[in-house]
Length: 363
Image (cartoon, rainbow, N blue to C red; front, side, top):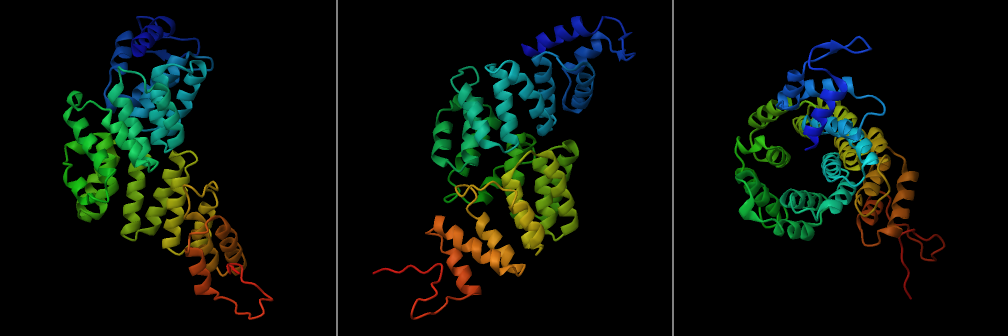
């Protein structure tokens, strides 16, 4: 409905039925051209976006920003799409379509808590019942809340699903049970046709790297990247692949591209930090690890990795200080104690004049 409304708005408020020029001297296309753009396939997305760029200006209606956000989303330019959809929501904070698209964009930007909040606002909608519960299940899975993900999957009526949706349902269910189900079985259930679906495509490229030949994986991934060069997730898989085959410089350049396509992304900072640690560039690894918000619930490994970086850089003071301070919060994590004893040993003092920072004295 919104696309139809926007079409009417664009036709009657922005153009005439014949080719004309506006006050800026720009050529305005015919009505037939507008119809063809708004009904275009993926290959025409950039033309639609370019056209909307011409007609959108400060103070334009929220629906126009929504429409551009929708096409940006479909062309997988999530960062730009988020800017537009936030403008729409600011004008109409309860609009279902706006909230749904905002949640999908947040999910693809890996802002999982934000995405969950959007989907919770609209999960009572019966018309899009299956779609919303799929999205809620996927977000819950990303947040490692497997029980909640299974709950949402169980709310979906399987009889109403298409073949691809059934396969997606099965894959998500299996991902909640990866301890019992080997990941290679997930990959075997996908064929070349099924991975044309964006959701299935992501799952395939995330896990297939370890279970297919390098030649096949490379060709499959590059083919999809050629179709969607702005997809940060595909470029991220490519960076991982390049790192795995020891193409450090190329992997580094691709990670930098991925960074520009995301907003603040702590998961990505952690991945890049580990990437530089693997290649023994500890000073750069620390730059990315220090960007991560101090959240020990989701990023419990970060203080340990930072301690190792300081240690390998020869900065014993920072390394010891971090190990001692984090140990107060992570009392059951023995990695810090083991790391400290391995590299510094335990100071032996029978009179306990100098107490080891990790030593606990019990009466």
